Image 1 (cartoon, one colour):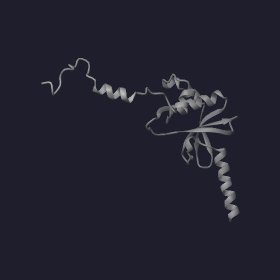
Image 2 (tube, rainbow, N blue to C red):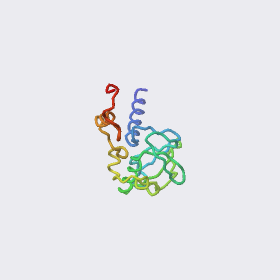
Image 3 (spheres, one colour):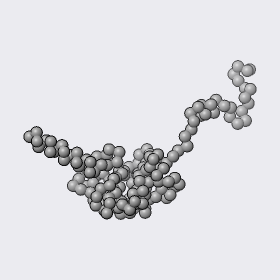
Image 4 (spheres, rainbow, N blue to C red):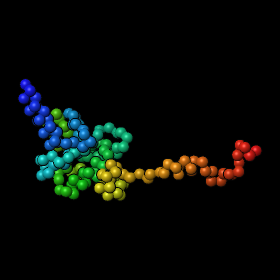
Length: 158
């Protein structure tokens, strides 16, 4: 029994190593991913895509169906295709993956989403860069008088 458990554990580790999914997601039946494969067969990587809106996701369409994805997912897709890997939208049916949409890179691009940043930068930032506001500048500005406001007015000045 102990030997069987050791073989089972080793099999799980081998499976996990060969099929590492993005952000530690373990795919469940019904999940949809964009999956990259070399020559269309050997798994390279994946990004989960969603069927519902959520914070940090943008709505896109693959093969006429709406999904919600991270900008980094679109960037990753573009980079995988640049390296000549096959990228498809695939559905986990519980007993294997079913391709449901080919060429997602031609259907959704960063440029099409209004993002002018390089895909590598989007991947590095895990999304589009946002203007960072200096916290102290924002606090200082909140105490500054508004345009046209008389700075001599004060509760104590009356």
